[in-house]
Amino acid sequence: MPLPKVIFFDAVGTLFGVRGSVGAVYADLAKRFGVTVDAAAVDRAFFKSFKAATPMAFPGTDPTEIPDREYAWWWAIAAETFQEVGVLNQFADFSAFFSALYDHFAAADPWFVYADTLATLGQWRDRGVELGVLSNFDSRIHSVLEALDLANYFSSVTISTEAGVSKPDAQIFQLALKKHDCPPNAAWHVGDSFREDYEGATRAGLRGIWLKRE
Image 1: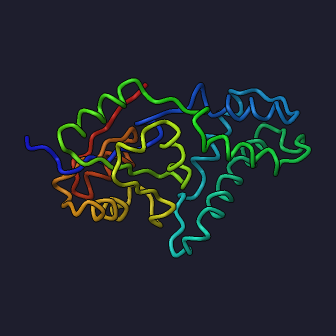
Image 2 (image 1 turned 135 degrees about the horizontal axis):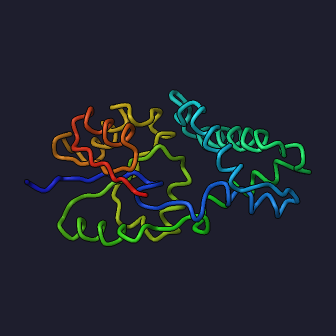
């Protein structure tokens, strides 16, 4: 099998993950703001809100307005999460809490790089294959990749909020391919979501690789 011209990687759940759980991170920071809540309950509430949310893509939005749209999208998820577990009204200043939470996920602390990530990226880079990130993430991905010492491996980053469309829509794959002047059949996409990554990539004409992490 010939080498691909480019391999795209999903971000969260593929290259790196959340330390412990999202609920644990939310609960730990909430405690610093005087609110005590069960981490497991927060985790369940978060994923309920996250899965029910509209896709994190803002078609037709002026690029200068995207960061504010991202912030508002995550604000709604966080507020619904804490409302679901019955503690939203316990925050003396939810705005200050959420600002700290949002900034926290833009840095290295809440994330860990999977043990196989660096070796995999290094192997493909050394073989002359171009690498890109293709993710339904927000613009904090750039600071996270820098903080985790991953940014230098990638020559492109394509995210749903900037593309105006999210995986599994074929358009986001086409936008990523255009950055590498690459036809679909010369590209692979690796990700942990069967629907968004494997099926999305396959339908767009790329070779989809489903990474089933525990």
